[in-house]
Length: 161
Image (tube, rainbow, N blue to C red; front, side, top):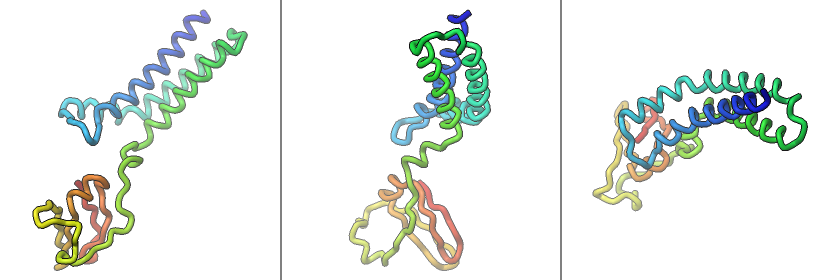
Protein backbone atom coordinates (compact mmCIF):
# COMPACT_ATOMS: atom_id res chain seq x y z
CA UNK A 1 0.00 0.00 0.00
CA UNK A 2 2.87 2.34 0.84
CA UNK A 3 4.45 1.91 -2.61
CA UNK A 4 1.14 2.46 -4.37
CA UNK A 5 0.48 5.70 -2.46
CA UNK A 6 4.04 6.91 -3.10
CA UNK A 7 3.68 6.12 -6.79
CA UNK A 8 0.34 7.94 -6.98
CA UNK A 9 1.84 10.97 -5.25
CA UNK A 10 4.79 10.97 -7.65
CA UNK A 11 2.50 10.66 -10.68
CA UNK A 12 0.34 13.53 -9.44
CA UNK A 13 3.41 15.75 -9.05
CA UNK A 14 4.84 14.76 -12.45
CA UNK A 15 1.48 15.26 -14.15
CA UNK A 16 1.10 18.71 -12.67
CA UNK A 17 4.64 19.67 -13.70
CA UNK A 18 4.07 18.47 -17.25
CA UNK A 19 0.72 20.26 -17.52
CA UNK A 20 2.30 23.57 -16.47
CA UNK A 21 5.56 23.11 -18.40
CA UNK A 22 4.12 22.30 -21.83
CA UNK A 23 2.68 25.81 -22.43
CA UNK A 24 5.92 27.38 -21.19
CA UNK A 25 7.87 25.35 -23.75
CA UNK A 26 5.41 25.83 -26.61
CA UNK A 27 4.92 29.59 -26.19
CA UNK A 28 8.46 30.93 -26.41
CA UNK A 29 8.80 34.56 -27.46
CA UNK A 30 12.01 34.18 -29.46
CA UNK A 31 11.36 30.81 -31.08
CA UNK A 32 9.23 29.64 -33.97
CA UNK A 33 5.70 28.72 -32.98
CA UNK A 34 3.11 26.66 -34.81
CA UNK A 35 -0.63 27.17 -34.85
CA UNK A 36 -1.20 23.67 -33.48
CA UNK A 37 1.34 24.22 -30.71
CA UNK A 38 -0.30 27.48 -29.66
CA UNK A 39 -3.74 25.83 -29.62
CA UNK A 40 -2.43 23.08 -27.35
CA UNK A 41 -0.67 25.60 -25.11
CA UNK A 42 -3.72 27.82 -24.73
CA UNK A 43 -6.00 24.83 -24.09
CA UNK A 44 -3.66 23.64 -21.33
CA UNK A 45 -3.29 27.16 -19.86
CA UNK A 46 -7.04 27.73 -19.66
CA UNK A 47 -7.51 24.54 -17.65
CA UNK A 48 -4.29 24.73 -15.63
CA UNK A 49 -5.64 26.76 -12.70
CA UNK A 50 -8.44 24.34 -11.87
CA UNK A 51 -6.53 21.18 -12.69
CA UNK A 52 -3.41 22.03 -10.68
CA UNK A 53 -5.55 22.95 -7.68
CA UNK A 54 -7.37 19.61 -7.91
CA UNK A 55 -4.03 17.79 -8.24
CA UNK A 56 -2.73 19.66 -5.17
CA UNK A 57 -5.76 18.62 -3.11
CA UNK A 58 -5.39 15.03 -4.30
CA UNK A 59 -1.66 15.10 -3.54
CA UNK A 60 -2.16 16.45 -0.02
CA UNK A 61 -4.80 13.76 0.59
CA UNK A 62 -2.49 10.99 -0.65
CA UNK A 63 0.41 12.42 1.39
CA UNK A 64 -1.79 12.48 4.52
CA UNK A 65 -2.57 8.77 4.07
CA UNK A 66 1.06 8.02 3.27
CA UNK A 67 2.64 10.01 6.13
CA UNK A 68 2.03 7.54 9.00
CA UNK A 69 3.51 4.74 6.87
CA UNK A 70 6.77 6.67 6.36
CA UNK A 71 9.04 6.02 9.32
CA UNK A 72 12.18 7.90 8.34
CA UNK A 73 13.18 11.14 6.72
CA UNK A 74 14.16 9.18 3.58
CA UNK A 75 10.48 8.68 2.83
CA UNK A 76 9.11 11.91 4.26
CA UNK A 77 11.43 14.28 2.38
CA UNK A 78 10.37 13.05 -1.09
CA UNK A 79 6.71 13.20 -0.01
CA UNK A 80 7.17 16.81 1.13
CA UNK A 81 8.98 17.65 -2.12
CA UNK A 82 6.13 16.17 -4.15
CA UNK A 83 3.56 18.25 -2.26
CA UNK A 84 5.78 21.33 -2.63
CA UNK A 85 6.00 20.69 -6.39
CA UNK A 86 2.21 20.40 -6.56
CA UNK A 87 1.82 23.67 -4.64
CA UNK A 88 4.39 25.37 -6.89
CA UNK A 89 2.54 24.22 -10.00
CA UNK A 90 -0.77 25.45 -8.59
CA UNK A 91 0.83 28.87 -8.00
CA UNK A 92 2.64 28.97 -11.36
CA UNK A 93 -0.55 28.06 -13.24
CA UNK A 94 -2.02 31.36 -12.03
CA UNK A 95 0.96 33.47 -13.15
CA UNK A 96 1.81 35.06 -16.48
CA UNK A 97 5.52 34.31 -16.78
CA UNK A 98 5.80 36.51 -19.89
CA UNK A 99 5.21 39.56 -17.69
CA UNK A 100 8.35 38.59 -15.79
CA UNK A 101 10.41 38.74 -18.99
CA UNK A 102 8.97 41.79 -20.73
CA UNK A 103 8.25 44.90 -18.76
CA UNK A 104 6.32 47.72 -20.41
CA UNK A 105 8.11 51.03 -20.68
CA UNK A 106 7.00 52.77 -17.48
CA UNK A 107 7.25 56.37 -18.66
CA UNK A 108 8.01 56.66 -22.35
CA UNK A 109 9.69 59.92 -23.29
CA UNK A 110 9.35 61.44 -26.74
CA UNK A 111 11.35 63.88 -28.82
CA UNK A 112 10.88 65.45 -32.24
CA UNK A 113 11.61 63.05 -35.11
CA UNK A 114 14.52 65.17 -36.36
CA UNK A 115 16.22 65.00 -32.94
CA UNK A 116 15.97 61.22 -32.60
CA UNK A 117 19.58 60.18 -33.16
CA UNK A 118 19.00 56.55 -32.15
CA UNK A 119 16.43 55.98 -34.93
CA UNK A 120 17.79 55.65 -38.48
CA UNK A 121 15.84 56.76 -41.53
CA UNK A 122 15.22 53.16 -42.60
CA UNK A 123 14.23 51.84 -39.12
CA UNK A 124 10.73 50.45 -38.80
CA UNK A 125 8.36 52.29 -36.48
CA UNK A 126 4.83 51.68 -35.27
CA UNK A 127 2.86 54.88 -35.77
CA UNK A 128 -0.26 56.03 -33.94
CA UNK A 129 -2.31 59.17 -34.60
CA UNK A 130 -5.17 60.23 -32.34
CA UNK A 131 -6.92 63.61 -32.14
CA UNK A 132 -4.28 65.21 -34.36
CA UNK A 133 -1.38 64.05 -32.18
CA UNK A 134 1.04 61.42 -33.42
CA UNK A 135 3.63 59.09 -31.97
CA UNK A 136 6.15 56.72 -33.54
CA UNK A 137 7.48 53.78 -31.54
CA UNK A 138 10.68 52.18 -32.90
CA UNK A 139 10.12 48.48 -33.55
CA UNK A 140 13.60 47.79 -32.18
CA UNK A 141 12.51 49.12 -28.77
CA UNK A 142 9.14 47.35 -28.95
CA UNK A 143 10.84 44.06 -29.80
CA UNK A 144 12.28 44.00 -26.29
CA UNK A 145 9.55 45.62 -24.21
CA UNK A 146 6.61 44.46 -26.37
CA UNK A 147 4.30 46.96 -24.69
CA UNK A 148 4.17 50.73 -24.35
CA UNK A 149 1.43 52.32 -22.27
CA UNK A 150 0.95 55.87 -23.53
CA UNK A 151 -1.51 58.70 -23.97
CA UNK A 152 -1.90 60.01 -27.53
CA UNK A 153 -4.18 62.99 -28.08
CA UNK A 154 -5.77 62.50 -24.67
CA UNK A 155 -6.62 58.87 -25.39
CA UNK A 156 -4.86 56.13 -23.38
CA UNK A 157 -3.39 53.50 -25.70
CA UNK A 158 -1.33 50.35 -25.52
CA UNK A 159 1.14 49.95 -28.39
CA UNK A 160 2.39 46.40 -28.76
CA UNK A 161 4.55 44.40 -31.12
